[in-house]
Length: 348
Image 1 (cartoon, rainbow, N blue to C red):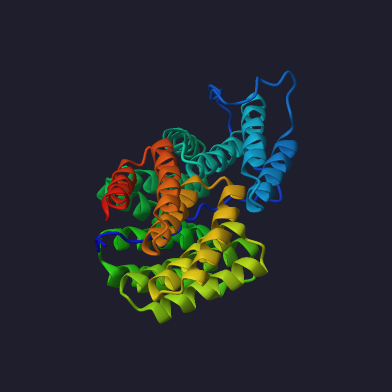
Image 2 (image 1 turned 45 degrees about the horizontal axis):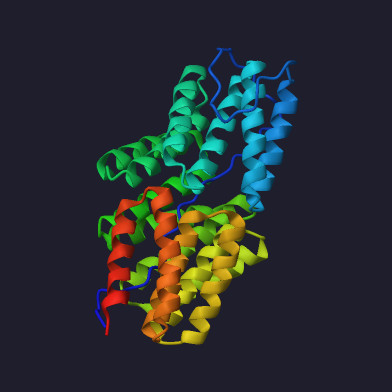
């Protein structure tokens, strides 16, 4: 069998949903065009408090994995915020809706929302929103292949977050910078930034969303050790990430840890255990509408079945994976999966 065939762990990219402040912030208003997916403009103005409550509901639904319902609420909140000229909440709606578009593979729409949020946040002086928009634009730019620009966005975001004392978002940016260095092949620098992120998150680990970040970072640290072929340390970090994710009911982190534990058992030759972890991850990712994660786990399963001689099943799963990557516009992974498919079909 060709040794180039391999399976993939996941370096999970965290999107932090913002919770609303206890009191509404008064900001100057400015009318804006509504995105094509937004509900038709409201006929009556909704109060700032009601828009905030709407966004809170969307955040909670997104945390529980109900992305379709959360997105509908964020889009309605965006319309309501613009109609009522509640620009502070307009920024929240843009970034949270953008996060779901990014999670479900609609990257151009996500990027557009983040750019709108950046322009708005700077106009009204909302520094936390500005930092969030910069951070997420960094992620979109990294995905597009411009690592230098992505790093610049992250550094701008980090400077604001540290100056304003926004610990939760600072942790997210440190995590994303670590992932960027990992992509660049600098595992030592990556572990330094992950270490900084873990240290910060554990200083304030009572908060629900901060515990989610801890699970995310542990998954990512495990992935670095996996790449360094230290399977023991990788497994320890994945298991701890899974424990935390299940304890706090964090399905995104749980699905990543399950997939990654599958790769550990796969690498170790424990086919039954690997299959069980992969199938658990796949069920959860489909429920979460995590198309990228679903495609990755399908690829992993396909490679596992091919290695044990179940070529027909491997081909079927890899075709599903390729279809998802094509839908996401991920040309690099499409090409890689097609190459693997070719190996399936030509291997004697």
